[in-house]
Image (cartoon, rainbow, N blue to C red; front, top):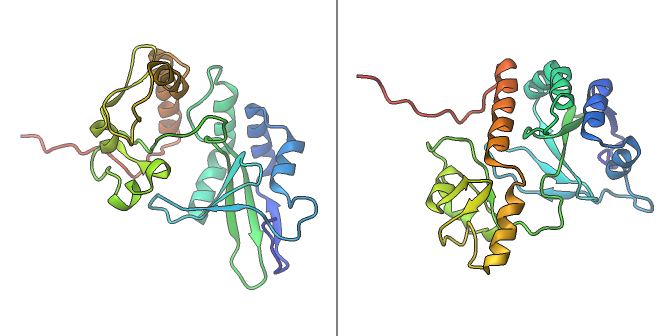
Length: 239
């Protein structure tokens, strides 16, 4: 489906490592391959292009089944991922409570005549569910530059909001479920008490302690790999 009409060829990169990841995630090979290949009766790909809201300027594509997201990945990230793929698989295998890390289930390489190779990282789609998505937040634990632009907020329920938007909307995790307070429509519309409770429960079915444990475990794994995101907290100079 990715090769197009230019005689391109698609190959799986480090298939054994990612195969182990898929087994840890309970992804069946037959269904996975069927979700990515060109659908029967079609001569052109019916992948859906998705806008990028991040700084990477990567291209995103949604599989026809909407179960997987494909993201173009630069060479340096490919090298990093291949260097830790077996540790990542082991992290997932040993996670009895699950993991909050993204589900990287395949790495594909597209070779086209006259073009540099292009890599696609295949991830499970976190939003592939029957429940409507009322708000999306990209939270990094930092407030420096972490406010969605006016253009992004104008997208309404399709906007990707950030840390300062979460604070402004008075959203918080508390007790045994995720509680959302405030009247900011970007956080939650005014709804009945029953629907409000249902939406709170759908944010996370885990207790606060369980969620904290998952976060600590994910952070410990990333630290062991010497990985960190670009959004670092600001520390004021000491006197």
